Image (cartoon, rainbow, N blue to C red; front, side, top):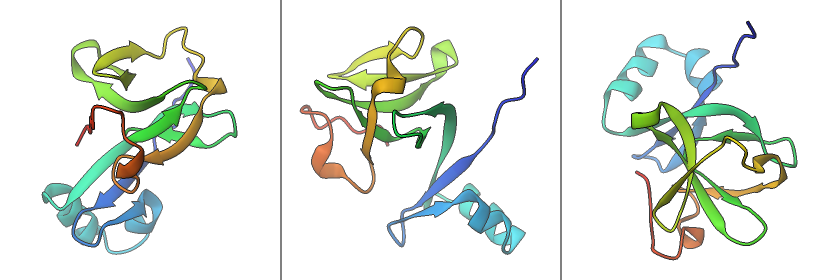
Length: 121
C-alpha cells in the first residue's frame, strides 16, 4: 500500500491571508488548536494531486480546464474530492486534472469564481 501525502493550508478569515500548515505547526501548538477550533479559519486539505505545472491542488482551488473554471471540493457523500462547474459535481476519476491549471482559490480570487458566483465556503 502506498502512503498518501497529508498536507493542509488554512485561510485566516480575520487577517484575510492563506497560512501554510507548516507555519502553524512549527510555531506555538496552542495557537494551531485555537485557529482550527475557531470559526476564524478554513482548513483545506491537499488532494494528493498536482496541476499541469506541478502545483499542489487543495480544496478551494479554482482550476481552469482549458474551457471553463472548476472549484475543487470534498464531497462528503462519496468521500472523494470533486470539481464543481455550474453546480454540477465531477469526480477526479478519469478527469484530465493533470492538464488543468490552478488559477486561484475561492478566498483570494473571488473575481474568477464560477459564472453562477458559486463559492464553496
